[in-house]
Amino acid sequence: MDTDKIIRTICYFSDDPSQQTLEKLEVIEKTLTDNNFLVQTKRLCSAKKDIRQLESIIKDNSMYLSIGSLKIDEALEKLDDFYSSRNTSFNLDLTSEVIDKRSVDLLFQIIKNKPDKTFLFAYVFNNTPSTPFFPSAAYAKNGFSIGLQPTDLSLGCRSIEDWLKKMKAVWEEINRLFVSNHDFLGIDSSIAPLNNEKGSFVGFIKRLGFDFSYSATTSIYLEITKFIKANNPKPVGLCGLMLPCLEDLELASEYEKGNFSLERNIYLSLHSGLGIDTYPIGVNEDPLKVAGILTLIQGLSNKYKKPLSVRFVSDGKAGIGEKTDFQNTFLQDITVRSL
Image (cartoon, rainbow, N blue to C red):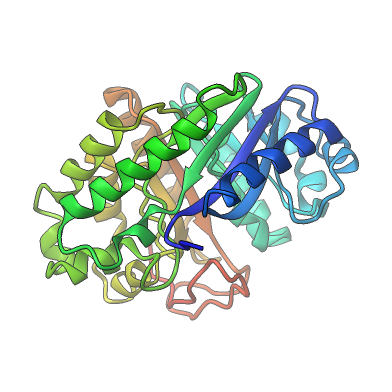
């Protein structure tokens, strides 16, 4: 099997999820694996906002679930169910909300009571529906979308152009496989890195001979995001450049060196990315600082009409200057810096 062709996730969006929904996902997965794709995860995002009900219907523990976008009152009401859930995620839509103490307290409550769930929660602004990537996923209509881990295709590429051509060929192949399927919503062509050499986006940038800090002042990221938006045969969802601080091993290393400050993250997100993602936060961080960051991201997102999200992660123990112990295979452990 050509394991460079990695599907990060197939996500089905349903207003009434059932066993039949899971059967549809199985058929989609088989179509992909029969064509030499490796499928990492299957996901389901429900229009129904009841976590307990959703998990009682979908008993498969390997399935990632989401109840999509909530408002603050809904989110606070569902926290206990969220804490006890298997792996159900949600996001808090703050696009046009006043960012107040409750908005920030929600995050710190999760950090205090169930810190591993910070991985399954994000704030979103001008969010785009039907992305298969969690926790930003939000239901708009029934159907499925596909997201890849396209960084693996970069191994052996000698230029950005070589990698982009390989990505385009894979998008076109997926589109051919599902073009006649009425449930096919499209492909989220976001660049979603993960951990190791093959999966690290920053690792690829370094293999091309670029120092990460230097690359931030070049047009590389603009070129990539322009391509993934313009050449996707059936775009859906976010279609942007993800910079998940602790999911990309090389990016986590740059954070440790002080080269991936929140300011640089926001700057790159504004012109090419999708926001602040798996960014570490100390248990003793100042809530006022978090409120200021959320207010800034809200203002930038609304000013440029650009989808942005904020996902801070904590192990519930590490304060500023202390080493994390996430015990999460997706997250690198680092020494937490002040926001």
